[in-house]
Every structure is written in structure tokens, then in C-alpha cells.
Image (cartoon, rainbow, N blue to C red; front, side, top):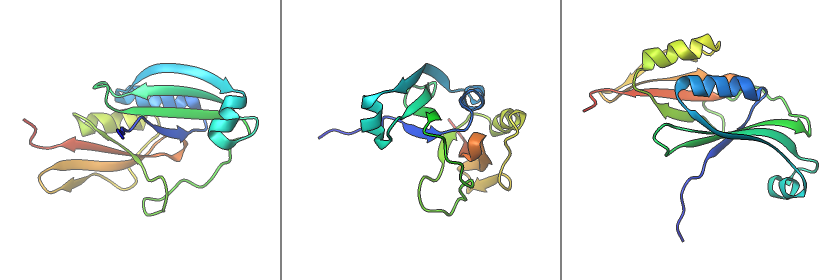
Amino acid sequence: MGIKLENVAIAVRDLDAAIAFFTDLGLEVLGRDTVSGEWTDTAVGLDGNHARIAMLQTPDGLGRLELFEYIHPDAIETAPTRPNEIGMHRVAFSVDDLDEALQIAARHGCHPLRGVGTYGDSYRLTYVRGPSGIIVMLAEELNRG
């Protein structure tokens, strides 16, 4: 049996704000839709499931992120996750210029949880609290090429 990662899906509070954040970082919107009906109730496991969705893709075409904004049932607000909590942890992106990516994130009110760290001589990286409290790791590879 073959297998490949299709996408990572994240429920967000404000779809348009989340799209703006991720497209400013360089992802591309592949499509948007509103989904509902028996097939979504069955697939997702929520009666009356109705959501606005968007599929985004990294420029290299290898990574996809699906964003959901629930219309029904009402979205359930939870406290933002912490890096050491069990469950969905974060979404990570390699960037060419970490400082530029942090400037873009700051324009959206998104800032590092603590600061920028350097992993050996391999990466400069940080965790940013993104839209809807999503933890987004941004990493710049050092010594490329």
C-alpha cells in the first residue's frame, strides 16, 4: 500500500485572516469553498457540519495546508496549545529569510513565543503564535548551498 501526506487541516476563528497570514509568508491559495451536507456530516463526524474552507500550498507544490472556519456547529474556543501539550503540536515551514518572515508575521500581530534560537550550525528557528493561536515554526537553514 502506498501512502503520502495529503495535507494538515486546522480549524481557525477567521478564515480570511488566516489566509492573509499564510499567503504573506508565501503559500498559495489553491481553492476556497463552502462545504456542507450529508457527505461532510459523515466524513467529519459532525451533524449539520457546515464550514468555509481554503486549501493552500507551498510554492514547491509539496506541502498543503487546509484551513476551516466552522459556520455550524459553532466553533469551540479553547486555550491556545503550549509546545509541550499532547496532540496537534505545530505546523513548520522552511523559509529563505527568517528575519523577513518574522517581519511579515509581526504585521499580522504574530510574534515569537520567546525568541530566535540557533540549532548547531544548521538552523535559525522560532515558534510564532499565529492566527487563531496556531503554533507556526519558522526555520531558516544556515550554510545552504
